[in-house]
Length: 155
Image (cartoon, rainbow, N blue to C red; front, top):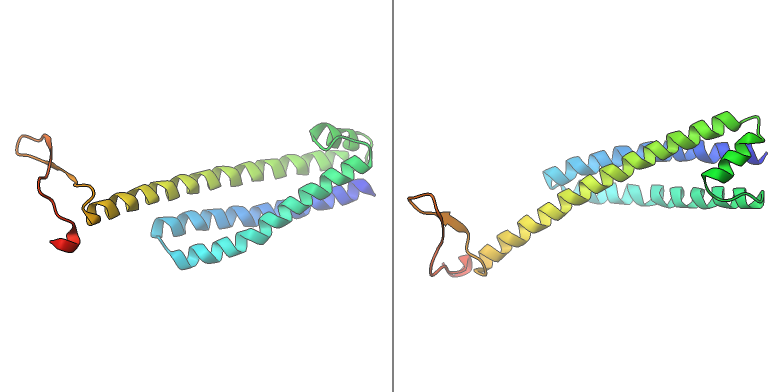
């Protein structure tokens, strides 16, 4: 009975992780296009999925602990060893782990894109406010700084 519940949690989380991965890919596209409306919709869709994944992970840990097993891979392997569903439990656990790793990789990629965009925006705002002057090239190809630059608002 416990093994069937555990398998159901894995199967549910695999479906949730696949949805999350699609949203992360959509988020990447929306970030590239700077589509704030889509980003907000994606964020609203991701939140409940992340919450469900967290709750299911907690449920799996509690299930293993109720069987006097550790709430990690060793505990799952012990459950699988005594269950007719053991092979399927380990297979689905591995599949879920792979999907979650792909989600994490996509999320890190999106985070780098966000940080790059923030840096670019800060630099542009600094130039517009006159706090920083852009590097220009002179006739010899050397970088030179413009002199007596004024903020765009005062130009």
